Image: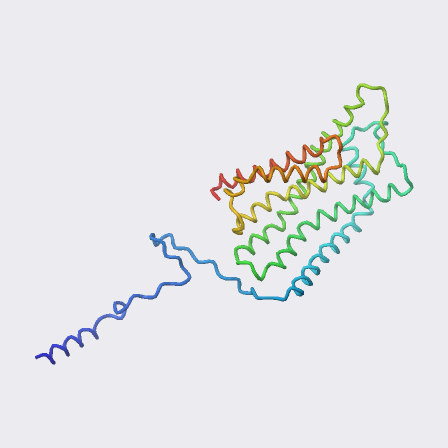
Length: 284
């Protein structure tokens, strides 16, 4: 009887469905939260990430930087023939049209150098998204697929933000600065001579600085989306960021009266706080 019962038990075990013999192994590509509906895919590892000698990294970085410089130089040469028209547009967009506000040239090469600087500003604006893209290519082997998407989306965004920064400087900041400058002589019967070189140095410096400053929202979004930092951490350190913005503004704004640095610093703080507020509103 014992042998018969053992045989019967063995036959019953053999009839158990295969799905009930052992639990299926967990899917390694899924997290296992308490709620199965909240399971999400685990980020895949970078497929191309591999160790490279330091010399190879430096060589590749130099090549990427050379591409940015070459493209900026080509764009500068293309803009150079139309620089006269750009100078006239910018000058009278910022200063009121009158006999006293005509640009004065005090050196033989002043106009040539100013045209070159104007064309170089155009090269800088185009080089900003190119630099973002070249940075993406340099870092691509070590990026996750979602990080690659963020970087690629940043390329056109960088160009748009740079253009917005130029318009912000041309239509708001620079007219306010020169109106403030002209107020110094409003109570005296004196004429002002606007030298082309020094005046345009200020104009181009402010436009270039604001084209770079308007990249702040993009940099913050990239850093948070790629997991380098969090909105809460940046908000808790806002006073440090404000101090860095003020230092940057006073370092790169050639205005001894302090008006231009003040406006640049306020703009940077506004972009920073506005981006954090947008991220808080969207729940990121």
